[in-house]
Image (cartoon, rainbow over all chains, first blue to last red; front, side, top):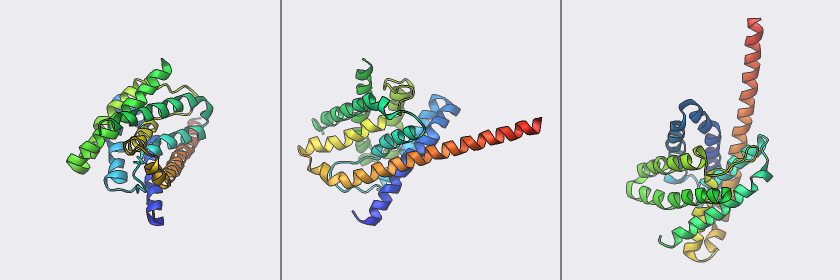
Length: 111
Length: 131
């Protein structure tokens, strides 16, 4: 990966949790559950266009690094920064790891 | 049960995103990918975070369904290849994406704090004017 691509990757990854953290909750506050559906299209869908549709996040290898890595880790970091406890979240993180590995394995059975 | 439903939430979201999304964008291009965001993430969010089958305790750092999705996508390719070589090649991207993501998240939280502070100041000022 060249420096140019690395910088683009960093910024693409920055944008995704940034938008989720600032907008998603407000959209739900304003519009109720429909706000979450709007957010799925206009935050996740639109940011996907940038990061994966046209490729702002460069893939250095064959194992897919989704922008979800940015959201997952970025939202935990934002939460810890705002005073929530990381330690208390460890069981949930463990479930995410087990669930993610299970899902990846299931997909490898037929894809 | 609490951990089992949390596991299920992450696993189901991971399976949908890392299979159907690519199929939609392969077939319908950019609009297919955008629509995949809406038609996959919206119901998964409703299930996992609005209805709340993923257990996020009060006062604990918030773990989004994205973490399960991210791991599912990377591990899918590791299992498909039957080796960790693809993951080793992808480590540069992984590290940069995590660093970028954490910077973005913290930056957003800092902005929220700053704007909340301003809102308090404005509220106090308007109180003083009323007095």
